[in-house]
Length: 247
Ligand code: PGA
Image 1 (tube, rainbow, N blue to C red):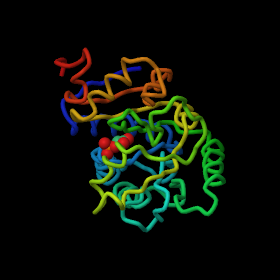
Image 2 (cartoon, protein in one colour):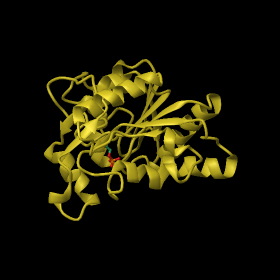
Image 3 (cartoon, rainbow, N blue to C red):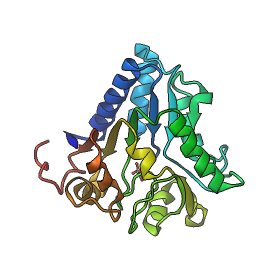
């Protein structure tokens, strides 16, 4: 695992966008694994800028997102589908039909999970998977547990995650309690992993994920087993590691 230490969230966003743009230039029909949340916003803004100003071409790119809330349809403003539309799909020249997220209101959620895995595998998995990290060490919505789950699955969000997501909703009761998340097989089958983190709230999770034992109690620690994983973290997120003070 390689760690790129950067000064702040702005640098983190640019660095992640640089890696992603490199994949898009090298392989115009690449599959990008995409993430939601606050952390990737700067990355998407930079990719949009590169598309508009420097002709970075997403026309043949396919994207697969990591997760979606159960119970929110695509038109709900807090659905991850709506997030991707607002921050990425409407800002670059990706074909909307090449943008995939799990359907959080599918009638048969089990079948939806199975189909999402099948579809991702049929595309040969992601060339690059962008990942955020939860304060509790989750990646996608793979929450701390006593085992890793390989397949895409339905998950009950932890109280910590629900609390963290409350900032996007009017009331705590409105925050979805369940989600569909890509499992570890889909994530770990990507050719490259790029995990981004900024701010002191992620410091414990980053220290444990990068330097602690590989354990489902810290789901992000699994990326230590990947042959091509890059962590881009800012000074605050690295505060509890030996890299603190180097940026
Ligand atoms: P955040 O979420 O980017 O909003 O901090 C990250 C995550 O929970 O994976």
